[in-house]
Amino acid sequence: MTEHCLLFRFPVPSSTRTPEGWAVNWQGCAVMGILNATPDSFSDGGQHLSLEAALHSAQQMQQRGVFMLDIGGESTRPNAEPVEAATELDRILPLIRALKGAGVLLSVDTMKPEVAAEALKAGAHLVNDVTGLRDPAMVRVCAEAGAAACIMHMQGEPRTMQKNPVYTDVVAEVHSYLHSRAAEVKAAGVPSVLLDAGIGFGKTLEHNLALLRATAELSAGPDPVLVAASRKRLIDYLAGVPEAAERDAGSLALHLDAARRGAAMVRAHAAAEHVQALRVQEKLLKVDD
Ligand SMILES: Nc1nc2ncc(COP(=O)(O)OP(=O)(O)O)nc2c(=O)[nH]1
Image 1 (tube, helix red, strand yellow):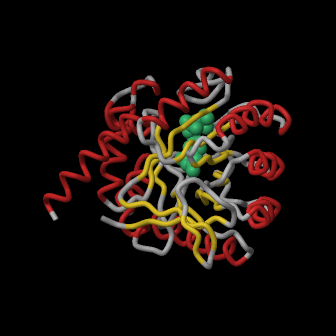
Image 2 (cartoon, rainbow, N blue to C red):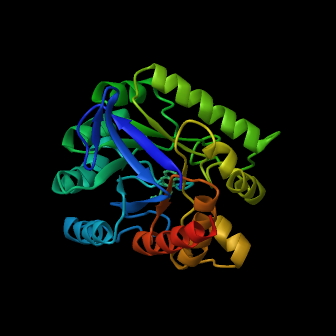
Image 3 (cartoon, protein in one colour):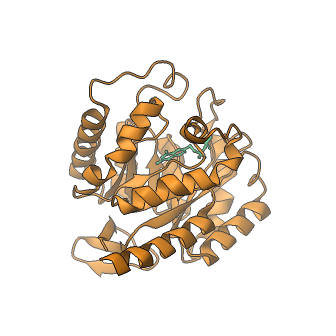
């Protein structure tokens, strides 16, 4: 089973100290549990707006073996209402502070450097920026804090990205972008990165399928790969499930396949179910080895 590693420059739960920094190592495919503290996320908006509800979900996910919790205060779906930094911070800081020291890795899902900076100060460990750290200020925030980052590919902006996404060779273009961004941000001092092809972010169904089928190719590189297809529209196109909240089985199918292709982590709403299914699959594959 493949060993994966993320490096941080500050102490993180379940980490070992190496000359390069605090290393978090894991085998197989880990689960990043989604915790959206938003009123309008495309599939679970409003479910975690109260601190009590969010902490209850976080505790359940942690007890069931989730590796990292991804905390977001602004929806990234197409045509989502933009959120002021202050509002985003009001939504996520109480949750991050309450979970700090709880023994689970915390990522902050934000496009704003000022939000990332405050979230890292409050106890987050990794910045998950769907714009791929496009803003140089975000690179500086991660480097200065010694935080790892998730670099995601997005063509265009959330408002316009699904209008008419076009590529010459989507796999080659997305992989080339991810590898070059990873090299650039690490050269700027970010200790470690996760790579994410950005399923649903400026992609057609065919683009998404080609990228998912190319997970092994991306995973063969030096950086761990995150696959995040949970409840996304391609599941409706593939299996006819118009309601986003009813797409967890299809999400699991896509993520189990991604794990078999070498994904280091998957980002999921039904996180506990994903932990269970991945553990079963890993044991099954071990017998096949
Ligand atoms: N790295 C990464 N982060 C992401 N954050 C949000 C969403 C959208 O999903 P969700 O958080 O459920 O919805 P919303 O953005 O509406 O809150 N997708 C990704 C993704 O594909 N990759």
